[in-house]
Length: 333
Ligand SMILES: Nc1ncnc2c1ncn2[C@@H]1O[C@H](COP(=O)(O)OS(=O)(=O)O)[C@@H](OP(=O)(O)O)[C@H]1O
Ligand SMILES: [Mg+2]
Ligand SMILES: [Mg+2]
Ligand SMILES: [Mg+2]
Image 1 (cartoon, rainbow, N blue to C red):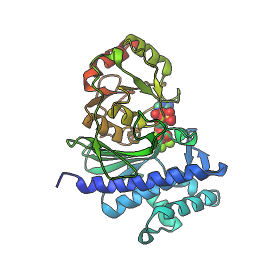
Image 2: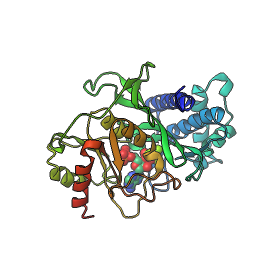
Image 3: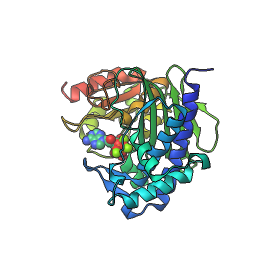
């Protein structure tokens, strides 16, 4: 049996069920089901419910594994959290089987299993129940992102992208894919609607002149102006593809685009591991390379953040040196 086969299978089921909750919430989302967190970012009942579902699957299969999840249950507690809590309760039980049904209290506890501090030893999972919540709210791209980190290295990544067309050449065709990678075993895509996996890899582009790059929709998450200068330095003529969430990692890994630039907009923002862990192993297994703007590999061994890194550059291995050089020239590093 291949390494991590059981982890892979459980992660796929968990991400698939969480993705289904997100899809159903989007169709029925009402105004009082979204909150603004302290950092001004949004969170919805779907984020909480997706985290409760994934953590429940993980706890059942791997009771000794720790979890780093983006969300916590604080906003669902007490009188002020009652409306959201009840909604998250019914949504979560809506996708769990009869034997998995949870009380409100068990759901809060499941969400808070994601409070692990992280570190360099042992096994822990990193979960972003909805990455690109702003994209989710505007009907754009978002991703349910789950990764397994062992001794500080990302070994497994599974992402669910409910709104991403299965085939980029058919933008109006079927949507909803899972992207799966285990270190050393390649990268794969399968639709939600079938278990058939196909291998994916970067496009065979030999010069940055022929490349397409993608970046965040939100200029507050990645500098669009620096990216435009870097693109010009690389003689890129194709327009930037702006896309929310780690769906960008999925897109480059299957050759829809070639470069993902995430360029710092502030000196103080520190990237979170759940925003990059699953994308990191997917890109590497699809023939790509991921570093920060200094050319360092991302260090997932120091806790909940990527405090030793700044920004992210992901591209095919072939183009990475040229892209890094252009980034460093424009950012004057
Ligand atoms: N200032 C700043 N700089 C960089 N990144 C930030 C910043 N603020 C937030 N975030 C994180 O961005 C995550 C969303 O990723 P994207 O920017 O790729 O997508 S999006 O355009 O925001 O939809 C988003 O993830 P989610 O909260 O899971 O949506 C945040 O963790
Ligand atoms: Mg968030
Ligand atoms: Mg995120
Ligand atoms: Mg999120």
